[in-house]
Image 1 (cartoon, rainbow, N blue to C red):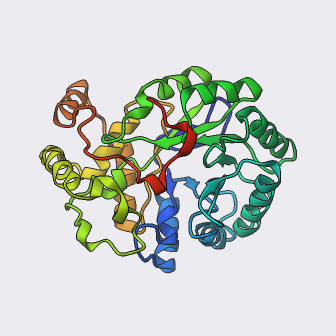
Image 2: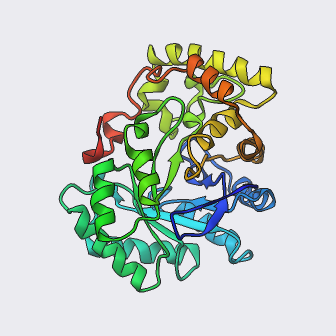
Length: 327
């Protein structure tokens, strides 16, 4: 697989990474054995960047990864995240004590003494980003993390953070139906030497070969209360995706492969991290690295899915990103 660098001086990784939220059942029941099979196939395909977080199953995703990498040391570049707490209610916490406790817990579950990349999962409005960065810099100086990451931040926050210390990566949602990062964030990352890591590049499964059926979502499925998968929004979105699906089929590509390839063509500093619970979907995701899109292909995709086509907010109020919403 083609390689891309995380930041200006970070590790080289496969151009397509693997998001591991679904290992913990965020999109319905997950099978541990299948998750381990996905990790094994990822190694074979050159998918070397794994992304996880404490909040994914309250550490379950990290535990699954840890159980695999103990027999495959040094084969993956691992990123994890902290900053979202669920007790007593969902809130963001960037205080030094919590971040240290969270990092130590992640290292224990992963079975490692450091991770290559550690993100603030969300920014805590009560803690200035400069103060949060100082905490992360200390972790780096202690050798517990290789690089600092920020997730779901605005360009202005990235600028402030980089004034304290270089940032290795920014991870925000970005796909053909979520294009907010084009309003300055992707550009700022490029200028500052920061990798941009799109999560949900296949739109939480909307960009699939077979249309998803929201009525089949189980109670634990993250999408069940997501506005874009609820009517009347879903019907409008599905009609657009059908046209994109026809274009992909005509070109001989799977729909998720094409959706991810589109993100790869938005800049050489982008490293998308599609998530999956199955080997089949992982293989489709990885195949995106081999797709070469022409200028005409990109223009046709923009015609089929113009900026702003998606109906509905990308999160429900309960799933919101807090102070970093921007326009």
